[in-house]
Amino acid sequence: MQVSESLRIAVVNLRVHKVRSLLTILGTVIGVMSVIAIVSIIEGMNKYVSERLLEEGSNTFYVDKFGMITDYQEYLDALKRKDLTVDDARALERLSTSILVVGSLAQGRNNVRYGSREVSSVEVRGVDEGFQAASTVEVEHGRFLSREDVLRRRPVCVLGSDVRDKLFAGLDPLGKEVRVGRHRFSVIGVAEKKGSLLGVSQDSNVMVPLTAFQKAFGSRSAVTLIAKARDQESLQLAQDEARAILRARRKVPFSKPDDFSILSAETFMELYKNFTSTAYLVTVGIAALSLVVGGIVIMNIMIVSVTERTKEIGIRMAVGARRAEIMFQFLIESLILSGAGGVIGVLVGVGLAALISNVTPLPAAVKAWAVGTGLLVACGVGAFFGIYPAARAAKMDPIVALRYE
Amino acid sequence: MAELIEIKDVKKIYHVGAEDVHALDGITLTMKKNEYLAIMGPSGSGKSTLMNLIGCLDTPTSGSYRFNDREVRDLSDDELARIRNKEIGFVFQTFNLLPRADAAHNVELPLIYAGIPRADRRRKVEQALEAVGLAERARHRPSELSGGQRQRAAIARALVNEPSVILADEPTGNLDSKTGEEIMQVFEKIHGAGNTIILVTHEEYIARHSGRIIRLRDGLVESDVSV
Ligand SMILES: Nc1ncnc2c1ncn2[C@@H]1O[C@H](COP(=O)(O)OP(=O)(O)OP(=O)(O)O)[C@@H](O)[C@H]1O
Ligand SMILES: [Mg+2]
Image (spheres, rainbow over the protein chains, first blue to last red):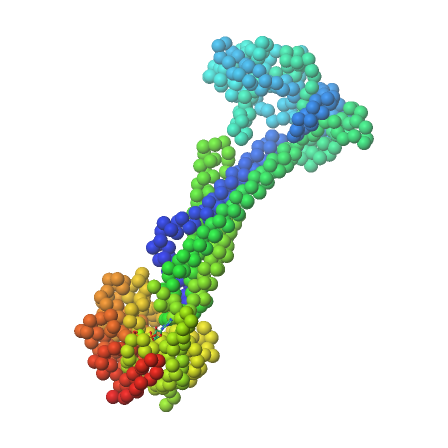
């Protein structure tokens, strides 16, 4: 028999039972929809995060004594470790052949005021002369902190663009004095806008000379080191050299692990991927569950449909339909049901992803493989759960089916 | 000339509860091509049961049924389907049309299962509807047709694949006598065109259209008369 006839029959029947058909495919719709939406969001985040991390400098890495802390005990242990200092930074620059430049960074939070305006809880960064070269900070207006500023412990600062906007609202901030906590700093530059990363602004900060930072905000000399390798290829070598140099300087015995940690964009990426793969697993679980439930609903409705149409099956057999043709007809019907569920699920899922990326800072990237898999699995569910009802229809005795009222 | 239908000592026994119902209790009959046969008999005598066996919709409990020189018992499901499709046109008392398809599509069904290309199907459907005088109602659904028109559509469906035999189980049973007479004219015309017909009826005046009348009683042939 022609496939077109099977399709025609199926479409006619689905049109007759519009509401029932819609309810039938709900499980499939939800399954496919959640896969598409969540995969799109996760993939969008992956793309976004890796782009941002690369932009942050694929040949820089960070060294501090904490690293990726995942529990409180680890934190307490790390707290006891020796601080990293500006001297370590200079040592790395001097002793390593693959490291181009090392910047030092100390961080704190404080309120920043200008006249009657105030921005609270701004990230205050104490940076040395190597920082600008090692990181990707650019100055949009004025100049960056110089070696002189650091050496002479000058009370000057470079504002993040958010802070500038909030404090000065159009006025030229250069030469003005702002108060960071209780301390006065005069503005010498404004950093270029970096935008936000996953909803967190990267421009809400104030940079001051590391020496001035340590004098004003703390006696402790702990810093994070930002090292820049010669190029992408020597990144791994640079990290190895840094590790060896720091272990020697900190007198870590051969048998002990590092008492500091080295983080690169790759480290962040790996951690992030770990997290998203868990999210993937959860999604697959939800989707599998709703697809199985959806499949059972389809099977149930197809059994009802086969029973309701017993007479029709009898008529078709009486005029010469073979069992395989009856089977095929009902299989096509459950395939259309689940396929429609898949298509609607894809559309709703894509819509949902677009909506989420519009109203939240989460980005979205719709993946062809996710759409393809969604549709394929939906059809697979229809085919699998359609077999039993279709076989039931095909097995009918023509005369019994014909007599059915 | 070979017999089209050869039935030898065919029995059909239904088990209803603890009881055995002998719907057919040993029927023997033969039939040639181009015969016009009427089967009569009181209600419950086994007429429909016999028709269903001849139409390959049902199988006998025992005995032999040869159709076109082939033992039906030995045929596979697919071969039976092919015979129902190509060799037999069944007209039911209750029409048995698909309610959601129009007359043309109902008539088209056997052609679809025969795998005939669309263009040929359209032409054959037109001819069949023309033959039963229903051409102008082709796009009507069964619910939009009168009883007589429905039966015409059913006859067109039985005719359309040019079967070896047309079986009609009380085709006029649900129609008034005037419409019934019109339907009989259609059968007469079909028979005149060279078709073989077996027709079940309760009405003597309907049976008189045929060339041979078989009377059943209690699952047995009571009489077999050519007229
Ligand atoms: N599916 C069935 N199960 C049990 N008994 C059946 C079945 N079909 C028919 N019978 C019995 O077989 C006998 C013959 O039935 P059949 O339908 O062949 O009669 P009929 O001659 O066509 O009667 P009518 O003129 O009323 O249509 C009846 O006694 C009937 O009760
Ligand atoms: Mg009967």
